[in-house]
Structures are given as C-alpha cells and as structure tokens.
Image (tube, rainbow over all chains, first blue to last red; front, side, top):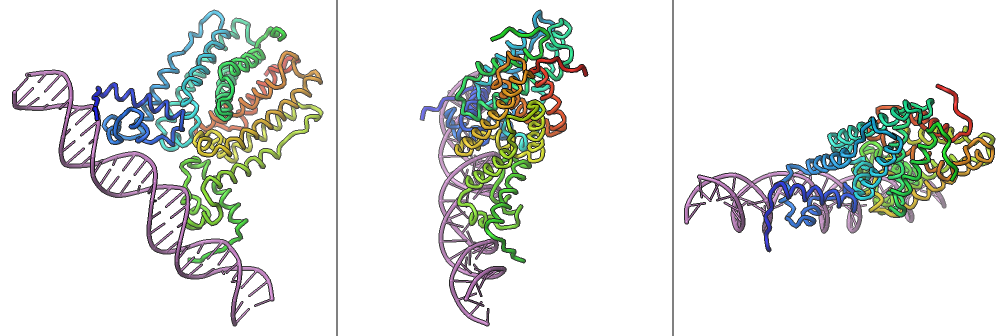
Length: 202
Length: 202
DNA sequence: CCTATTAATTATCAATCAATCACTACAATC
DNA sequence: GATTGTAGTGATTGATTGATAATTAATAGG
C-alpha cells in the first residue's frame, strides 16, 4: 500500500471537498466517515486525525460554502441595481447547480436538529444575502425603477424564497430541468412585477 | 404491564400519525422504529407487525400527506380566482405550520435517495398543485385581472416556489416567525405584482 | 367456557457507524 | 544521522438500528 502523506491542511481541504460532493450524491445524513475515508483514500480512523468529531466536518463544510457564496456580495450603490440583482441570482443558481450539496444540506432538517451551530451559520448567511438584496431594491426604489408600493425587504424576501423554492423543486424533480435557465426566467418574471414601467411583451 | 390490544387498522394509523409528528420534531431521518414504538406505547418489534419495512411506513406517511394536501383543490371556474388562490395558499401554509413534517420530509434528500417511490409521489402531488394554481391564474387572465405579459404557468410556479422557500426559511429560522401571517403577506405582494390594476398603497 | 386468531412481547441477531487506542512509518529539523 | 512531531494504520469497542423467531396473551365467535 503506497501510503501518501499529505499536509494536514491539504487533507482537511480534501475531506471537506469530498464531503460536499458526497453530500450531493448520497445525501448529507447518509454520508459516513467511511465514505469520506474511501473518497480521499484513507482509513476511516484517519478522518478523526483531522476532525475531532463528525460535526466538525459539517462546520468546516458550512464555512466553505459560506465563503463561496459570500464572495458574491453586490455593492448596493451599483448603477442599475435590478440588473445587478439578476446577475447575482444567476450566479447563486449556478453555485447551487454546480454543488447540489448546498440545497441538500440546507434542506436537511436532521442537520439542523443535530448541529445547531451549523443551522445558525446558514441562517446568518441567508440573512446577509437577504440584506444585500434589500439594499439593491432600496436603490432601485430611490432610482424610481421599483414600484413604490412594494417594500424592499419584501421584494428581497420574495426573491430569496423563490430561489430556494425553485432549487427545492429542482431537487424534488431529480434535476431534470436546468436550474439556472428556468430559475432566472422565473425570477425575471418576479422582478418585472415589481417594476414601475410595464415590461415589454414577450 | 397492562397490555392493550388495538385493531391493526387503528395501530397503523396511530403509527403513521406518530411518524408525522416525530418527523417534524426530530427530523425524518433521525426517526427510528424505537421512537415510533415509544410514541404509540409498543415495543420496537411490534412496529414490524404492522409494516413490513421502515420504508413502508414512509410510503404510508406520504399517502396520508398527499390525501390531506390533495383535499384542498380549487375549482378553476371560481368567481374571483385570485382571492381563491390566496385562500388556498393560506390553507397550504396552515397545513405546513400545523404539521412541520411536511417540509421536513419534502426537504429531506435522504428520503428521496432511499425511497424513490416516495419522491415520485410528492413530485406528482406538487405538479397537480401547480396545475391547479395555473388554472386559477388562467381564469384570472381571461377575466382581465392578470397582466397579459405573465404566463399563468410561470405565475403558478412562482407562487409554489415562494411557499416552499418561505417554509424553508421558517424551518431554518427555527419557526421563530408566524408562517401563515408572514407567508400570506409576501404572497399578496407577489400576486399584486401580477395584477393589471395597480394595488392600493399600504 | 372453549378455541382460533392475532396483537404484542421477550430475546436476539447482523449490520452499521462514530470514535478510541496502541502502534508504525514518514519527513523535517537540529 | 539521531531526534521528534505527526500523518496514517489495524484492531476494536460501544451504541444504535432494522429486522426475525419463538412465545405469550388478549379478543371475538360459537
């Protein structure tokens, strides 16, 4: 057995990436430390050299996803906030489609029950995203692009809910449609409804 | 030990109800046959007298939920379809709030992986619900209540996605807000955006 | 009151899984 | 080139879990 030793840092990253991939494939709670060990080419106990408990692996996964999603934060003072928002949503959907573990973990109530720290992690992540959307809608409102009767907070909540709802349907329908295409189409409909000017006919 | 015997039919129903309640409390995949046995006051092996396998319990749960949700189908030829839709959504949110197991089971990818029959079950259920919404929006469109640029299918998809997205946030935020109140408020914003007539100022 | 049916129990199994521990081999440092 | 820190292994353990077999006892019908 050619035993390849890697630095602890590299291994940790390997394990986290394997966890994300496998969580998407077989579901977060079906994922065992043995699966992880097989995926990175180690023995099962070796996993515990890098993470004290299995929960710690999920926390590391959560941090990684937060960092990946958190990167895409928009400047609320951008010129055309609604276009910017659509780009943001498009990228968000892309991230989900690329790493299906995101909805899988997010949708997994088991994880929330067992690992409240992780739940809080994602709660904060979603909150900051919603606030970012709110900022963009607020800018659009002062620019006169947004109908005055809709509160920026509500518009942001609706966009985020729609993203997650569509992702859920995508997951429920076994990813048989293109999440990014279908998602951005629906979100465009949604945002059009918020606009002051009536959208062009299709 | 006072041993109480009940008819197989009653017990089956008891077990299904316990499964739904416990799935909401501790999550579908943390739910063991021992939990179920404790909940209905039996020993763990007794559960297998009523269901051959654990998967069969989930199928029974799925059928029960489908029957409960499927009951609320609206007649698409109703007088004011958009009001009817809001009522429908309100009841839908009520069902979710009353039995949180619904999103928990729906969101649980583990269940889908292990039990594809159940996944297909819910997929069909959601499809029929979306079609029901579509019918209502189509009626609203011919009545001139709906802006012509929005396709009834898209509006229906958006409403359903929003319901599920909000339910997910509710679950993620540990049910710290009132799902029915907050949900119907957002859905009203959403539907207002689809209307031809500008909504009244708040 | 007796008997057939069957709900439910006790006892137990095989599998799975997270985690521990003693030990080994590798690699950098002095 | 010996020393030392540490990545990794092999063996194992205790807890959990789904499921089975043999047995017991509650209920219904005659």
